[in-house]
Length: 69
Image (cartoon, rainbow, N blue to C red):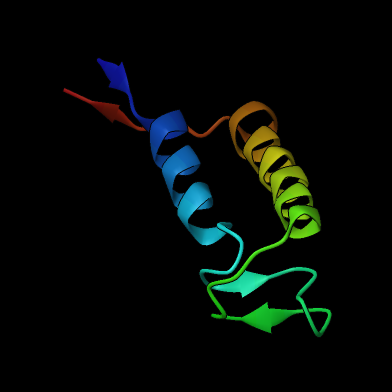
C-alpha cells in the first residue's frame, strides 16, 4: 500500500502558500496583500518558514497518512 499523505499535504500547502497567489505576507505596500501575483525576497522567506512549520506539524507531529490500494 502506498502512503500518499505526505505527497497530498506537500502539494496542498505548496499551492496555498505560494507568495502572491492567494496572499502575500509581508506585502509590497501593506502587511498582507491578497491576490496581487507579485512577490519579494522577504515574502518568499516568510512563506518558506510557514511552509516548513506546517509540513512538520502535519507529517511528524500529527502523522497524516493516506493509504491507497
